[in-house]
Image (cartoon, rainbow, N blue to C red; front, side, top):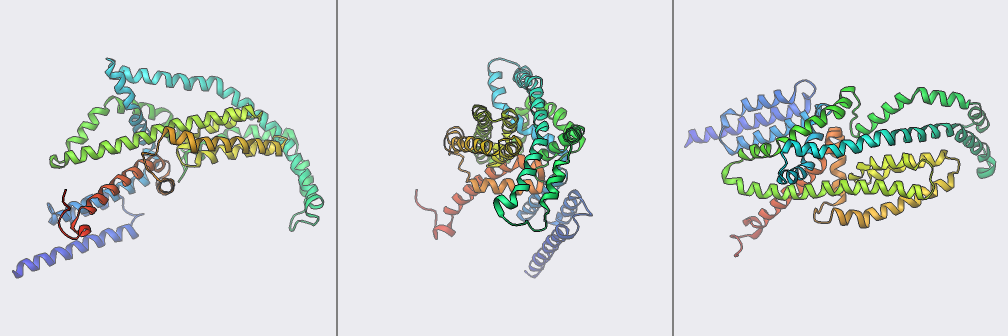
Length: 421
């Protein structure tokens, strides 16, 4: 009896050492060793526990931690792969329907891709020149806007405050603004167009941590479509292979869980993408009807309101440039009023009609939970985190529901045996 007790005590001590090594690594050694080295070291340390529940739990825990760590470190590199996986998941049902119509799968993918490529090409050849003209016109208005600002500053002390602004020489500032040559402003902005465009692109891709390397841009433009094609072509085989590794006694439960997960995730993603596109189009139409200048520019930003899939982010992404344009458009109060009315109407339609009707309430994700998941994932994992935040949030929701159901059937909750029936 004593040797068994000593063996058990030794296992407990060894387990504590393993957990201590894990804790020390997570606390101190993150900048020295890679997650892969940590994972392999812990696998070696845990070899005496092979086959035990403790071993399986620790392997799973450290594997998840190592995966998250590597995802954070390699987020920029993995972003095209993750984006391609998301696109393949969204497009697979349509490809399956085309395949059932007796089209070979590769041809079905090509048929699905051609309209998308055609629409993108049309937007590039027709939309980009129009947007470029509007941007040039906007740039030409900047000197007039500076003149207006100078007038506001010059009249601010007497017309509004009646006192001097502390630490600011309004007359000197107004003189400096008036002394700026319109030709010099236009020349500078035109010379900086490439840099401004590059910074804007990096800002969009860098939600969370910042993406902006040349490889990342090329990855999105070139690598993502290629990866999406191959993933779509082999999607069913990939799902089947993953399913083959599930333990057979747990297969039915796992299959039912994944069906629920797929239903909620696909409903949310496809519905939100459609709702985002509708919001973008409505924003452009509303600003155009209101006679707002540069409605195409703001509408393009709003349609890029795929950001609308993130609660309230689409509103901010399109509202900020609209207000900036309103400030320098020459009719400040009128333009701001138009922007406020259009965005209020569109957001009301989105929140009360478009979202509930298209996405529905069956997903059951609370807005606070969605915003928290996106904020945390974006902070730690950058753009990849934004892509994975909603799938992870839905997964946690289903796991919590399953855990809650098991708890309510347990003796801990019931206080005795399982409830009858």
